[in-house]
Length: 118
Image (cartoon, rainbow, N blue to C red; front, side, top):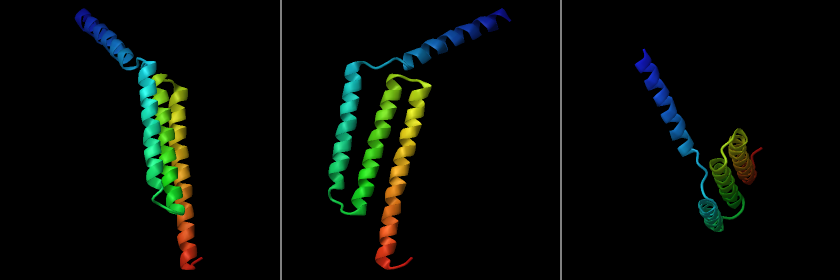
């Protein structure tokens, strides 16, 4: 039984060290590079939205903005993992979905108005 307990303790210690290695904070340079990448992706998505007009453009911009907010929240959660950071990621995802659904609702209302149906 002592061998089993010793192996259990060794396994537990190994897990603790592996989890702490995964949760290590990234350097400031790594953070800045990833933040720059998020900003660049947002600018590209925003530029792609310029080809649309009206409500389709609003929907495209809402999606681009939502993706940027979620990516930024996820990056911040990786830098400083905590319950608050996880909450902020969930909140960013919910806000992105809300903005997108609001834009989709506007598109649907506009299409219904064009057709002349109530």
